[in-house]
Amino acid sequence: MERKNEAVLVMDFGGQYCQLIARRVREQNVFCEIKSYRTTAKEILEAGYKGIIFTGGPNSVYEESAPKCDPELFTCGVPVLGICYGAQLMAYTLGGEVASSQVKEYGNTKASFDSDSSLFSGLPAEGVCWMSHTDYIAKPPKGFDVIAKSDHCPVVAMEDRERGLCAMQFHPEVQHTENGSTMLRNFLYNVCKCSGDWEMSSFVKDTIEKIKAQVGDKTVVCGLSGGVDSSVAAVLVHKAIGKNLTCIFVDHGLLRKNEGDEVEEVFRRQFDMNLIRVDAKERFLTKLMGVSDPERKRKIIGEEFIRVFEEEARKLGSTDYLCQGTIYPDVVESGVGEAEVIKSHHNVGGLPDDIGFIGLVEPLRDLFKDEVRKAGTELGIPDFLVWRQPFPGPGLAIRVMGEITDEKLDILKDADAIFREEIAKAGLERSINQYFAVLTNVRSVGVMGDGRTYDYTIALRGVTTSDFMTADWARIPYDVLAKVSSRIINEVKNVNRIVYDITSKPPATIEWE
Ligand code: XMP
Image (cartoon, rainbow, N blue to C red; front, side, top):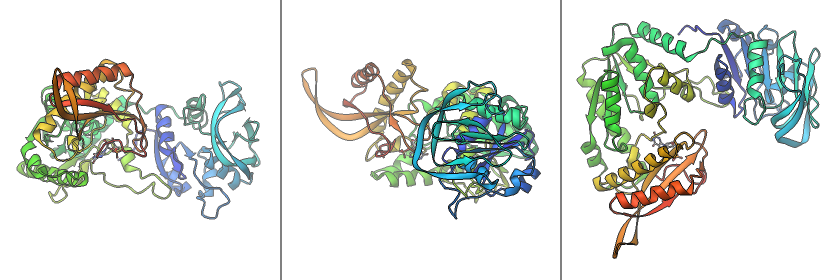
């Protein structure tokens, strides 16, 4: 697709903050893309990037296998900002001196900054920046001025104003660096001369036009799950082609309480979309009968999901395009050398590729999750969908431990609904990244009134995380937990014990199965 916005390139040298840098750039209203460090100056000039940012990376420039860039990048006239390893690489390639320190400098570091430089203009002369490095720039290359230093690091930042080359040993993209966002902004606006034309309202408008151009008067089918990505993708396509879009919502009966109805209400009533809601609960539960192994549950649900979707899509006759809610992190494979591998992400376990679609419509391919949310709000999708916490494809099947029955599902749905309601009442919805109830397979003895009970244990799980790869258990206030516990015991039959999961990931996973 032709690019309308000005853009900056983030070159991935294997640093863990690659995507974070890209998000920080976009927060400054400048569109940016991530590509491999192998991208050449020629490709960069052809693509018309207004600036380049080198990420950090785990290597030392002296290692033979260390990733190096096309040296012409420094002479092609496009401004470059090197961060951490990227800074050292710039110094090394241009004839400066990179030295290895005996100790790693890690964490918050006080530094002094030159407020007259392009990067630090308008900022205080002293501040805290976040470092994580062993090698350091001992001497800048010819033509560079040192524009920041610290007690341990002679070149915390440097710039060659004439050539538009800048480098920072620290990480401006992490929150611990004071004014890090302004530093990036200074690079984008002062050095690259960006104007900041990346705005959600224009993205929405342009994308609707692009979909119209791509699809014309052909038809599109979309698998709607009620998750934010597929919802926003579907609404964008709907705005572009109206009733030529049909959404298929496979209700496997493993959704949370009332969720199916809520999703149907929004898309059918509010947006007046062509929506097919398939009530496939019996079909899924029959397949799952007697199954308690979590991986088998996942496999059965994944396969059945595709089968149901295919059947419904076939009933529509010939449909031309398939719409998917693929987002940017799905597109960019992180890691050195992988950055350009583009995969078609399968949101629900697999693409029904034998139906014969002529192509895919993926309107969110360029967006990060927080941008998808912004687009959703811009499109008028209600907050409860836009801010919905992640929900696994296999749904409650992996939150009912062991064999799944209708009775167990009902217990779990009721308990989970109470938990979510109390979290919302306490105003904690957006500070806990994922929270849910689990129906354990444990029954224990209790006492209620004068009688002995022998009932289920519900586990509550709440985590804070930024990427769901690691997570900490959420410190939910005791009084909120107390309220949830007493409400579940009083309002949900067959439950007599509530526990709160205080394990981080690793060693535990977020889900229990
Ligand atoms: P774990 O349990 O692996 O979960 O720490 C990490 C994140 O992934 C979600 N999850 C799944 N999502 N299908 C999905 O679509 C699955 O089978 C699945 N298993 C876990 C989980 O909810 C959490 O957000």
